[in-house]
Length: 360
Image (cartoon, rainbow, N blue to C red):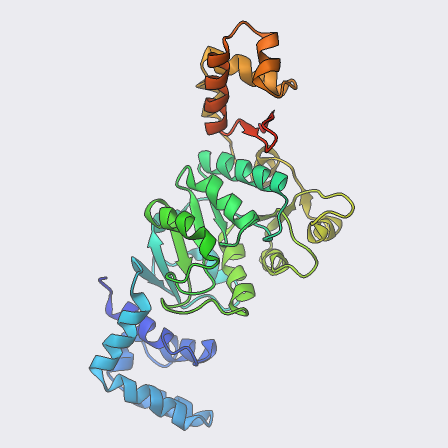
């Protein structure tokens, strides 16, 4: 990977995992005119750590700076597996992240970094998302992505994975990791992330090889909330990490949307925020109206005659090929073919009992 001298310096200091954020920022952006100058003069580092009574900590950093081989080893491990790094204060740094608490000093990425600079919307949910809500999440993410909106989420099973699957069909998905880019957690989503790293974007503020520790997840959520123009919560109980994302979004003055839930369902957090004033939504159209997005729909216009007939019958309540055959003159093979195409276009869904229903 080719890096500028400033990028190299930021990645080097960022690799000191034990070093607190405010110290890293002090060294890189306050003690020196430019981050790369840390390799030219050790005195500012020594003076700073002496002033806060941490002389040994400062000398430890300086000892590494004096060893060129060790510097290169630190940086190599940090970026191994990444396509690039974006540093705080650079022209490429997403403007939205300047508004979040403790803006990341470095963003390690793999995939299409241009997705950072267009319209973005966050969708998050818990691992225990109801299957019907996963289907709806995937459909909303796909519809928004089809219309040019990039979907930002985490990587968890359930709501996050559903959002990424829907958006990645149009190469409009960003997954933000809590650990390094090479630490896919949970591993069940490894195939999804592998595909995204080629066609979409995976992102982390942690150097590669950093395991996703438990306390990294709520901190990571400020990036998800910061990148999105708004955020949709699709599920979550009172203790869910989704709360952090919603609070970060509200703290940045962004709109929060939530799916509706009835009594006893896994959505107490959504109900709580709706009561606080969040928008209750059930469709991409409602989100678009709130956020000012203009949706496009190429799918319905591209349906052939058989697909149009079958789609309308499913929308009216027909649940299988037999019921559809009773209402039209299409052959069974034509009906099955149309049902398959409509499923691929995400206009209908086939349930576990083999029945169909429309999702648009």
